[in-house]
Amino acid sequence: QKEVEQDPGPLSVPEGAIVSLNCTYSNSAFQYFMWYRQYSRKGPELLMYTYSSGNKEDGRFTAQVDKSSKYISLFIRDSQPSDSATYLCAMSARGNYQLIWGAGTKLIIKP
Amino acid sequence: DADVTQTPRNRITKTGKRIMLECSQTKGHDRMYWYRQDPGLGLRLIYYSFDVKDINKGEISDGYSVSRQAQAKFSLSLESAIPNQTALYFCATSDPQRGRGPGELFFGEGSRLTVL
Image 1 (cartoon, rainbow over the protein chains, first blue to last red):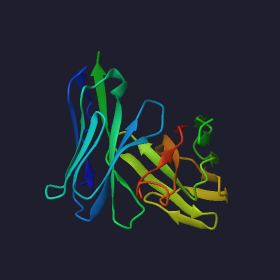
Image 2: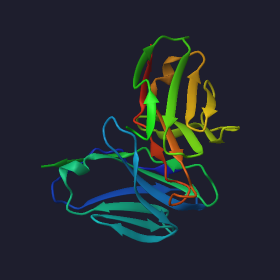
Image 3: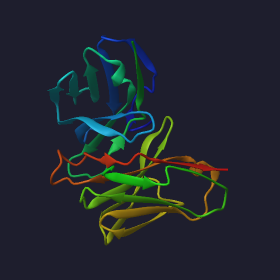
Image 4: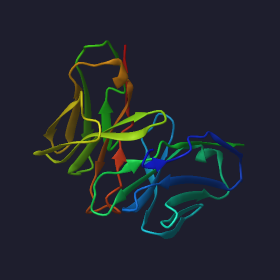
């Protein structure tokens, strides 16, 4: 069993829909949780970062962490075709440099 | 110009050949990383370096070696390439003192390697 599980998709939704992307993990020591966005033929770029539990909002994006369930989510409101990309979750334990990555979910927003 | 530059962007080679992938950065970061990305497996860490004199193995270092020539340059070598090293390779940098925690990585655009 992988330490971080993420559905690879693809997830296809119409423009304007609310998108929910998720990861589950098994290591209760994880404290830092990140979402990276990767466009085709590009490197990943950091989208959202949270420490420990709770929510964080940035524009149309909201990241949630539920440590009791070992589950993190990324919500995208009013989705746009430009949001079409692969979304990777990543996490690490406190004081640990090494990130553990999910496999990534490919998201397609249909105009 | 990109902050993290990888060369070559694409390379096709044959089994047994020696290959070097190069990475240079203008971000001024001390930490540099080499990752490998395969479909369904996400990103896996090959090697990382926290400064010029510090080289560390990552999760999947077998069959790879690295050289940190300067703060700005970090090269990945495959001494004798094999087909299961066919993958997309990423160089990344980070600077935890300025970033938002340990995980903010800045990636290059990737080097796609095919070993026949």
